Length: 285
Image 1 (cartoon, rainbow, N blue to C red):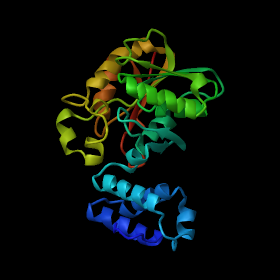
Image 2: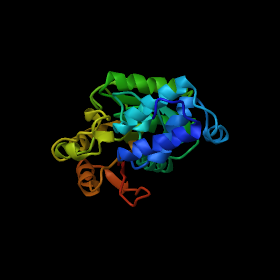
Image 3: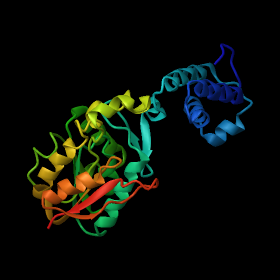
């Protein structure tokens, strides 16, 4: 942006050009979202005020936002929150940025358990709490526990539960997967780290430089977390219980083999909108 005070429409054009020059594919929509937040308005307000000058304070905020986005920091990180399952989730440096693909897991989980009865839910590697809290939001009779190895992530999840009015039905613990747990659950959820360690360097910078490595790296072959889950799930699932676990691309066969080897039955591997097997549904016998 220039040092003069541009009108809103000009600021949007200049911001879009700045991001496009930095090879941001979503330059126009990102510039619009960032300008809306800098001005404290919505899309309608942005259009209706297009001929107004951008106030100096908002212009400075917008310039800072553009600097960060041009450096490939995700918009959700810049603004500090992300919409998931039509709910608003705060993010933190220790949490994975929820992806729309993970909504496939929530949809599968809700379809796998009947509505209208008490439900005990466990979310392993809870991060923002998005999986657990989305299920609790749609299942008023459910109570859930989220576990994360990061204390900072568990705090973010707890705060999200408060903000969403779900804190009375959610508890968050710090632990290494299921080592601190002794009870059994009707539904277990997990989006584990599944990127092979050697592949992380090739990820887009929005992921590689801004998502916590702890939430990305699945070890040499990407399957370390699934091995831990396969070992833990038989003792965590109530009789007839269901686990729904997210998959990386091409991991369905390996993960289903691990789970079957642990004595679990495989009820399906639902696909996301791109046709990729995105999660595995396993049940206890």
